[in-house]
Amino acid sequence: MTDLSLTDLAAGTVVKPGDPEWDAARSFHSGIGEPTVVVRASSVDDVRAAVRYASSERLDVMVRGGGHSAWGAVPGGVTLDLDALDSVSVDGTLVHVGGGATWGAVAAILAEHGLGVSSGDTASVGVGGLTLGGGIGWMVRAWGLAADQLVGAQLVTARGEVIEVNDESHADLLWALRGGGGNFGVVTRFDFRAHALSSVVFATLGVAGDARPVLRALRDTMKDAPRELTVTYMDVPEMDPSAPGGAAITACWIGDDEDAARAALAPLLALDGVTETDLGVRSYPDILMDMPAADPDQPMPGFVGGNTLLADLTDEAVDRLASFREANQASVLFLRSLGGAYGDVPQDDTAFPARSATWFAMAGAFDIPGLVHDDNRPLIQAEWDAIEALGEALYGNFTVSTDPAMVSRMYAPETIARLAAVKRQWDPQNLFCRNHNVVPA
Image (cartoon, rainbow, N blue to C red; front, side):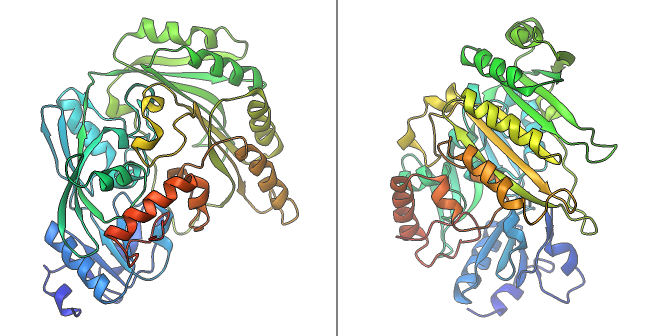
């Protein structure tokens, strides 16, 4: 197959260096890429043609949905832009979502039907990347991961064939798609089982003073909290006047019962230094954040730290996390409660790791000249490494690293072996390697 196969596609579908639309085509939410060619797919047939072309030319494929992935910055290869494949259709509680859709648009359409799918925190994030990587969202304790709500998919294989994936057809592949990333093909349609959702109660609690007693109380409160409640703790530095710093607890309660939500949060509100700043009924789409696209003139600084899935938020973990934030002026600390439906799923039922985890934790220092120096950068990383050692696995969706070694920190050896066997069956040449890559067995 030659390049003529791509030029047969509709005008504007294939964009190359030098074309008028090149700069726009190679830009993605998190930066600007340097691919060999960009294919803006408007149909499944476009996807098939792009995959077959890439295979014939021995070019890697980078699938782009929402464009938040760091893999878009890796040079070369075929960038396959699925932005136009963004349809959403609802059949009862079964929801069919195009591979290029973003969660904000999906949530808005589902809200019209009184439905919801747990989908992360950010409106512009792509359905594909979040789901294939697992998807820890606001309803994770009630409904599990986004991947746990995935019941089927339409996928274009490395051979350019279109297959339907579900529990009855290619069950091994569906297992891999539930947390194994984009290693196995291009998902052009996701099928989710949605849940009844009229509204949510969303609360913000301001936090002042020592984080340690607050985090211990948060841990103890969530041990017996109703599954309707999921919480986060975030402490961020003041970066500019539009982004005030400080610590806060945010909470999402499924439904419109403000009294029940406030009762569940009562142990936290009784703490010194914790105040209720906002609590009220919202539509689910309204609580998803808007994240501005990257500004090429003001690139984001590096990040020294990481994330981990913790079986328990022990006193040692609390102290280390709080100390990390205190020791590094320009650093961020983020925690999200797990458990509930997340932990109901047997470990072997999906590729996603650490089903015994009850907390997700992330911390890191922004690598800003004058605040982080060459001599203390390794010390900061060592501080984080000691925290990560307390956890069970790294969550791939929350790292911007493209280091191949990340995979061994994401999955247990037996899971990697099983993923590698599925990879060998569906992508033996490793065409789909622009991800947290599992090498074919």
